[in-house]
Image (tube, rainbow over all chains, first blue to last red; front, top):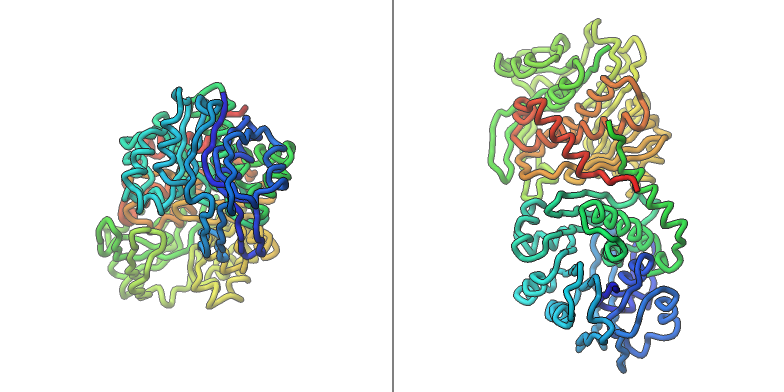
Length: 303
Length: 303
């Protein structure tokens, strides 16, 4: 029983109102696995270049993260350069160098083919589908994230991949662009016939909205003293969410709600520092303290 | 013991993606008193013109709303014309005709001078202060709403009025413009020394954030099938919030949280129809049903 993630491992150059950093560890698979591995062992499928060295390996090897599926290729790792304005809501991409990621074809090791849970990070939907097709047993949960680039540029392939998954995790703007609807309930009604029975809409500083056939759940983002770098918030949320689901015996609405709280809290640590630093240095005490604080922040006593 | 509101009563011309309406009953005092009077009797201080006829009087007289403080003057009532784009988040003002509101000077009847709670709707801060000065006893709660027009154009007078109040209700953009801060915790820290000990930040479709010395509370807006006209959502929230506080024996954080839920639910009915129609036709069953649904939407079971 394992939790598998396929996605990117990258070096990022980041500029935010709090400062700038170069060659920071990033990518959806990094944030996801560092978050999810607090709750459940993780298997990673990704590709890195020669610049991915002992320092980076150590970050993952400190955790229950299996790197058998991490391919190493000659060349440089995926590199992204982005900046955020004062409102921190949306990154402007300044440069994207795919490098070794350009001809990435995930080929799952034998030991990766029967995961209990799968997260298909935001990559080419044809590859997302290919990963699902390599499973030899149906996982309990498959979740998928995507972005406008694929919604607009590879819609047919994306719809094929979405058809195979249980959970669609997507940001609010992209949910609108995928469905052509603005209202969240309308969006969910359009998503259901595409395949997923669960929808998680990521709303940045306003939190997430969870839609399920059993009921819905709205959770705000945690109130933070400072947001330094929003990069990776969504993938960290996904890691906490899926890590919780992988470790939970149940699949009911209450379990999904608690998974959403875990994702929300983990994401709050990610955005407090550049790159994956917030996740790397997070103690269990701090995690559980903030989980209690988030519960308090949204709690109303029964009448 | 009463709940007093000073504000505008207006006729609005509204255009939203759902349609257009002319001469719809509006204004902060209308939305506030129609919402608050579901929970507690209300005394209204406002001014109307000759165009405010039996049809409009009836809307208020159907409820425990005292109109002794409603001044009637020759001329036309305040008239606002606005439109909303697809995102419904911000109104564009097309026309504002102050009419009889231009030289409005609230003069409280004797029976209005000892309210237990007061809501100073968004009007000239000099008038808001004048209303407070006419009280012969200190109310339990005084709340104030304002907007960018006064923040930028009458800052000194506004700060004097804010100094007298317990609760500042303000939308997110205006909270930023008043304090020069972006982070909500920073905003609250800047508001405290100005006088109010409680801050309610209105975040439109994302709900409200409540800040108190005893703790904070985040509540999302209710998930609606359709938002027809956002006009009056903030004043309706204020009505539900203050009406609940006026009727509650306690002043603790739990009471303020429940007041925020009531405001949120009442506002959800306002935005489902043009003008005050949603509030006028709302049944107690529908109100309490949706209150239970909102509690469900944000509820996580204790571990």
